[in-house]
Amino acid sequence: MKYINLFSFILILVVTAGCSREYDYRISNSVFIEDNENPGLPIYSEKGYNSFGVYWGLSPLTTRNLHDPSKIVVKDDSCHLYFSGSTGYNGYTLVISLPDYTPQTFTDLLSLHGKEYNLASDDCTVSLSSGNQTYNLKILEGTFKIKRAQKMFVDKEIDSTILSGTFSFKSTVNDQPATFSNGRFDMRFANENFYYLSED
Image (cartoon, rainbow, N blue to C red; front, side, top):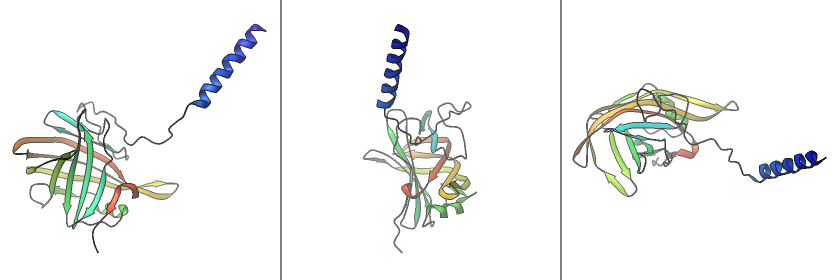
């Protein structure tokens, strides 16, 4: 009888503790699976993991730690891709602007499938910011390639567009030489992070 009372007491404690706990059932903003061949960077993927990473010199700038959400802003006859991440302590946003490209909805991004841009000569611009500080980048050489653009379906309806690709470039950051290498991204864009601000 003593063991039955003890078991009942423990059962009540476990049930009470389980009911009082609040769970967050939201999917994480970013899935980070480390690349064994490029330590500190996420693997290259095409699954919509919302992962981004690049070596800035020898330091990885990635979505591994806390960061602002990435987004696309269409404005001034250009499409601006905002990739946000951190180097561990400092958050940064790398913006790659594609000229003369003005998709009106996130599904229009499918037209980027297989596109490659020469960052030094295709009128593309690249900027880097951290908080209120913006770094002036002058691209010396480099490419930005969208290897795959695909639809993501939820309950048989288009939920978002996934852009996956690679990039690397050499530049000056505030007149100091810098290399951004082995860059990769696997980002999901939908209504909540796609902004069409161009005037018709």
